Length: 238
Ligand SMILES: Nc1ncnc2c1ncn2[C@@H]1O[C@H](COP(=O)(O)OP(=O)(O)OP(=O)(O)O)[C@@H](O)[C@H]1O
Image (cartoon, rainbow, N blue to C red; front, side, top):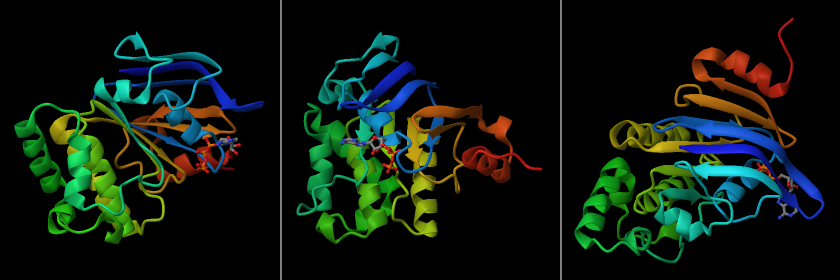
């Protein structure tokens, strides 16, 4: 579905991605994990058209998408939930969700999908008329994902969904993502700093370090949290 080959990107003279190969198949849940500054956000920003690459190719459903505007990619089903959640804090949950469905002609379809995301994220139903800025961090993260779902993505990219959340809340967010994948066949590309809790959800994991892929493996090839941690920190067991 999504294929990235030899992707190089950065800022001025700084190379943040030094030639990345990555593939996401339909229905997969792919995680890209790596420490601060590894290039994870740059990767998502470049794929989603927010930033021009230095070189390499990006294809989505077989077509090159380099140079496409983010809103165009969004219409084609490739949607980014950026780091920091980017919800409209002064608007209500209802209004934030309505903005997610804006641009779609089918009002009945939007209403049906709003009901769908409220089923997936019950906490948003409880806070539907409330101001988004008053939600907790976990609730805001769920709202950001719900709003993205209303844009009818076939592939959704999420930058650090667990950032700043308590472990129990991370479990809830991950469970919702699992449900969306299972029930709607939504394909997911998720970026995280930590490897904690991802083995249960992921189908494929990439580890990024200093702008390079240092591990590219299916979850069944990795096996355990310990093996994943060893690969992440770059050492092998004695
Ligand atoms: N706007 C920018 N201008 C200049 N350099 C940047 C900019 N954004 C990121 N960088 C640099 O690019 C490199 C990769 O950053 P990036 O944000 O992609 O990493 P990351 O893995 O997402 O880290 P984090 O988890 O901190 O977001 C780092 O060296 C960072 O300092």
